[in-house]
Length: 503
Ligand SMILES: Cc1cc2nc3c(=O)[nH]c(=O)nc-3n(C[C@H](O)[C@H](O)[C@H](O)COP(=O)(O)OP(=O)(O)OC[C@H]3O[C@@H](n4cnc5c(N)ncnc54)[C@H](O)[C@@H]3O)c2cc1C
Figure 1 (tube, rainbow, N blue to C red):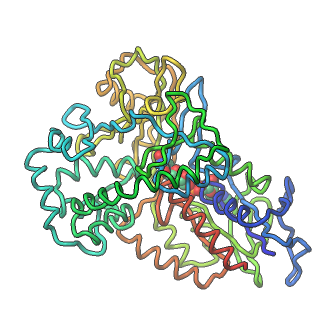
Figure 2 (cartoon, rainbow, N blue to C red; figure 1 turned 45 degrees about the vertical axis):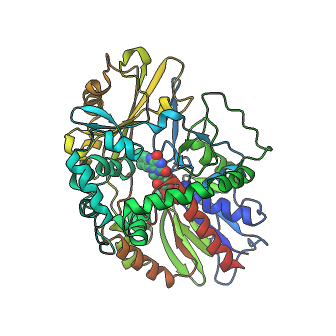
Figure 3 (cartoon, protein in one colour; figure 1 turned 90 degrees about the vertical axis):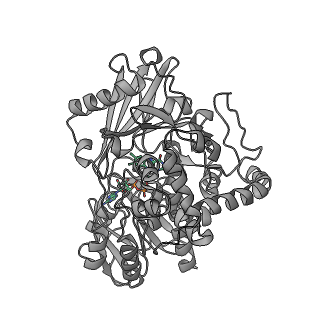
């Protein structure tokens, strides 16, 4: 019997909506193509729009749903404007794929080979402890210092990623291993990022086992014991015979092992947001921007670019800066806290090449560059080396990231400067012979939210303020995890809370 308005049609908002309709028999979509979703209602009069079921609408300001998940097909190249995949170690995403009837595609063996650009060359990121000891990426002094982790005392409740790594491991590990990881995931600055909020599992391991090395060994042993059991269970759940797996040899099937392989879809990450939108069957309204929110009796009154919308329950699945704007006149403190979450810009620059024009074999996932190396790009992913259908036969696709928290200005260079900068950086690293055959620039002026040392306090205030606004929910990548997996998991949690409230 409730009208639910979900603001933001990225993976977070779409997941909330889908989780709600899949838990409830769906009601017919309301006001398809109408100018105003819900006509203004008088107090006490709900205009006869109530159904037996939840009445759900997703309001999306852009002219397409999907948010940061956006796959662009250009002359035989499949360019990801945002994420190029998710890790297959979270069951919720795989369950959602199975439910939607879409087939996840695990990256191939190349994805296990990751490079770090250091001391003028690409170095393979060591995968095992033995490979780590043999690698010349870290000096012997640095390797020995890392064992200090076994006796290092536990740290404070929260600290920067840099402080955590320098304290437990060493500065060299921070500069050569962790700094590029922070760039690759958050486009962030480890000297500002919170260890507790950016890498909660690492902090938990320290707290539980007193040492990262000891914790990893124990977890590895435990994982081996349960792996066989989990494999069977995932296979039964997600990849039943009702979903034929017709992968060619170059398309590895998503394995059931919860080992964290980068996973996407044959036609790119947008497959999942497209499938969600289709299942939502007209409930996603594009081109509707929400400007503000107020309370009118028990209802929320949303001011949108298409008129007023009334709802019993509102989910803001918008970026924090957008939610802050929407809530500006509704709750100043909530709005202020949301505006404190920063989103530095990132540009994604795709180069398509005939394979013969690149001397490097591109036999891996791609590479990341430590800030200390003084390069301008954050790194480059070789998408066509790890997934099929990213480039036509005899071609390759290179996807470089530039900008982020440490060099935001670079993301906003003029097109030609941006292309030349990326080309000049890439040329010596992978031995480019000529200019690319295909170029695309995708700019995110506000790309990825940064969880700084005040993030915990911001979350506490936000949660506190929401307690006095029953029926108002916030979700999205600004709060508790930026990965697609986190957005999906959190979307399901919000849907659960709503269902409980409605029962
Ligand atoms: C370059 C890049 C690479 C990434 N790589 C990866 C990766 O490889 N793997 C991974 O897991 N994650 C990756 N991420 C992160 C991941 O893509 C995002 O965290 C996730 O897609 C965010 O989803 P969301 O729904 O929370 O937010 P968004 O995708 O930002 O969606 C929010 C939606 O709200 C809409 N909106 C905003 N304001 C309003 C308004 N006033 N009214 C109505 N609608 C509004 C927006 O148009 C948008 O569609 C990457 C992100 C970027 C930018």
